[in-house]
Structure formats: C-alpha cells, structure tokens
Image 1 (cartoon, rainbow, N blue to C red):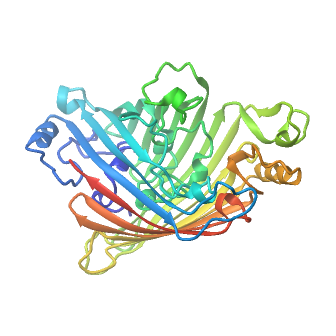
Image 2: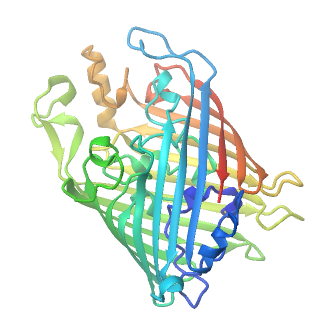
Image 3: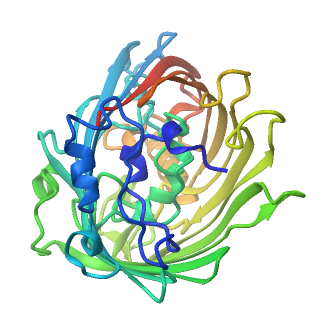
Length: 460
C-alpha cells in the first residue's frame, strides 16, 4: 500500500496522472486540500486559491552522498577520486480544476517546473549507471525548467481520461509513487532499465504526447499513449529550459501499453496491491550497441554504425502490502515490491533489471509516519554493450568507450537502506546507506559504500 501523502514528496506525486476514478460524480475531485506543508494557509492565499479550483505547491528535495573509501587506482582510472556531493531540486506544481473555476466539466490542467543544482558523487569512483543522488541532472542549469504542461479530460463518470500536451513518459508508464522512498537512481524515479532509451521522456524531461487511460472495472485500468520522440531531450542545446516546443527535432514515436490490477487481499480487504504489465514499441532509428554495417565491432573498426529501425521494451512490476501492524494506524504495515524489465538487447545498455524492496511504515510505536526501507537491484549489461567493451579492452582502446567505461561491463548491483523520519508537518529527513557492487558494471572497479541523506521540505 502506498504510504500517505505526508510520506511521499508531493513534487514526485504531481508528476503522475490524476486517479481515473474520482469522488465527485465520477469527475475529478475538487481541489480542497493540498499536501501537508510547513505553511498550509500562507496567510490565507492557499485556501482562497483552492476554493476556486487552483492548487499550487512548492517544495524542495535535497540529497547528499559520500564514498567511505578511496576509488580504484590504475592507469585507466586517473580521474577517479574519493569525495562527496550534494544535489537538489525545488519544484513548483500548479493544478487547475476548470470545472470548479470556470464550469468546464471534467477538465483539469497540470504544470510542473523545477530548478536543479549540485552534482552526484558516484561518478567520482567511476559509476555512470546509477546516480547516488537521483535528483541530479536534466534541469538545464536554469532557474525555471518546465517539466510538464498538459490538459486532462475526464469522461464517462471518470472511467476514461484523455490527456495531451508536454508530458513525461516515465511519469505515466512504469511508474510508482513508492520508488522515491529511496534515493539511488537505480530505483528512485523508476527502475533505471525502464528509462534505458535516451528518447524516453523521464522526469524532468518531456515531449509532446497524447494519452488514453480507462477503467473497465474499479480494480483495473488500461492505458496507452503516443509520445513523440525528440533528439536531445536531456541536452541543453535543445531543452535547456523545457520551453522549446516547435517539434523540429521529432524523429519518431513511442507507443506504450500498460494494464494494472489493483486487488485488496486479507479477511478485511485491507492489504492492497498493484500489479502492472507493460510493453513499449518505439519507431525510432537507434544505433546497434555492437555492429557496424560490415558486421564488425563499430567501436574497434569504425565504419558506419548499424542503425536499427525500431526497438522495444517489456516489464512487470508490483507492490503488495503483506501485513498490517495491530493496534496502529491503517497506514502502518509492511509492503513488498518487485519487478523485471527486459529491453531489446540490440539497442540497450541494460538488457534487463530485476529489483525488490521492503518498506515498513510505522514499525516503531509512536512513529506512524516513519518508513524503514531496503531495496536491491541487479542490472545486466546488454550482450552487445558487453562485447563492445571487451573488444575495445582487447584492442587496448580505452579512449571513447561507451557509457564512460574504463573496462569490460557485465553487470551491476546496488543495495540501499534508509529510514525516513517524519520531523514535522511537511518535513522529512532520511539517513541513507548505499552499497555499489561492480560500479559501472565493471568487475575491475572496487565496490563502494556510500553514506548520505535525503531531506524534503514542503513549504506551501
């Protein structure tokens, strides 16, 4: 069961689409109350806006991590060093219920902007696969970067949602509000293999898109969409501010399809679960991760890199509350989540990822909103990517290796433990432990232990 809003950063929650079934005659529920915040009323401004269907929220997420040991030494690791870093984001989220504001039945708009700062520490010891501070990157180094701006229409008493505009694919598909109870990018945001393509819009990047989401029954939804793939959505030269909308760099499209079953087990039907199955087809030319057009290793022999006309991805994800804690609030209990993502092995860096996590909310009496979490992920490097690094090492060509590799890439694992402390209304602090095995997928790199923390403040 997802923890209450007080435990989930609203800056993350607002990147997800509205619930398909709502409480007001099947239409989206009116905006009457925002997420818990330090200043919930803001001198009466927030309630005044909410009564008119306008929800505005501002928050900050900050993540710090530092390595406890020196990095691997050797002739190819000259830039590696021991150190720590801090990264963060402030986020502004605007939701307008146009039925409440102007009588346009069932229509809402959503807008999210961010400003990001800092860097991530894992690159210091050679890892480029899983950021120790997932909040890093993609913000364009500007004060205001547009994440998403879209409209959403509810039809047939909330059983069908139609959305369109600038949207993040990975916030709509293969997503869960539970992922960011953790800090490492192998898990938080979304399992990293799910966002393996640079054409998949992943928060804070977005593309033009149209989405349909329907509920044939209360415990089941099916959704599909078209996201128009754009070059450089994570690069400053195209999307520094996120406000470049001309579509001149559209190179194809992605069509994801996802269904989710939401049962409630237990004698009292108080053990909710979410089970989703998804598939993505992308009609975008993507480079083969090994071959040139002559059937040789492109990175070793050069020539023209073989281009694949299309690619795909499939995934299964779930979370299930497995027990409640007697005599404690209903939100307390133990939840398990896991999943498997498999990518086309010809075009991916990671051909598959397996992950699992436990989250225990309210484990200690008197701390109902604290969450103890443990997560583990295993990432397999795609055979073509692995063979490319192997061929380059055998040819003694370490310059220009893919993924900033400095050796043969095979697989990588990350273990994370954290404890989210509810400090006060709108404020959480989470001490964090991360253990990297085979950093950057390289067995030649020393395993790394990192300590840090995540802080979250919801201002208003």
